[in-house]
Image (cartoon, rainbow, N blue to C red; front, side, top):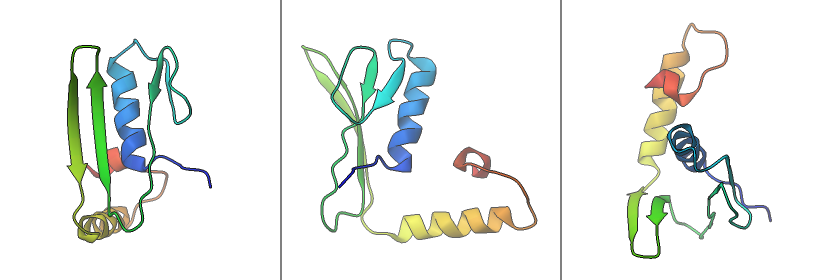
Length: 97
């Protein structure tokens, strides 16, 4: 089974790449030089936990978002649908916000 990163993980990775030029791309395979590694883990009924870590030999900083249920995802889908009423074209989440 192929593990794909969530839209949140991809958005965060792309945001990091846009301001940190130590990395040239992101990947979900093995970490390598100049590559921002996204670790993807799917666990049963977990609604969603996303963490961004900056790690050095001396320490680690972690920022975590945890969804307690699917309500936030449903509300986001409804907000996106309402935003699209009367519009044509291709839109991303950045357009909604």
